Length: 251
Image (cartoon, rainbow, N blue to C red; front, side):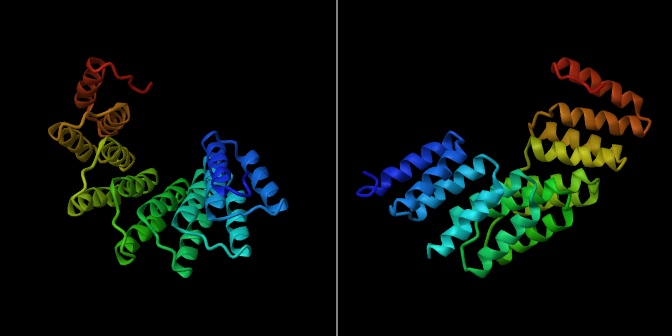
């Protein structure tokens, strides 16, 4: 029984989380509490993970509060899962508050937690805050990774801040991180918004030199930038390249 073997409850809750049966997992946890069964950090973590997968950020915050009421201290995994749940619902203020809570409670903050919070911020269009978090990571002893920079680049790119996007691309080299297709595509898109066709074409060439195959987003952004700059010959050449690679141009 679960009373004698609480690990079985953890396994059941984890299975429900993987199956995105969030409400069922919450009902099981409630039953355990009402039946006076042991409820530990593993059970809470499994349920918060279910909330993350089900994008139920309110429930994840309620579970964190319940943990504290039960004198069960939240850890890095539970907080990161809650932040991710907030990110999926674009609740960037809640995500940032959770990061601050981790610092206040001396809970170790890792790259995953920062990436999740920055993802929420990116969806909220708050590019300045995303850059502030990126700058804070070294001070917290957390090293940014490729995902961190991609989210930061996307935050700036979506708002048309191409200079910041280019600076982040250069900063990746300082951190010995390799930009990937997503990074380049996002920067080229930002350059398109900023009417910087020359740099967009240079970056497209840089991708090919680095053996990174441009995708539809990259090509279409470069074509758009070329068109805005009156570079019709370059735009036509890019269109031909897309057809050769069986990629679909924007209409």
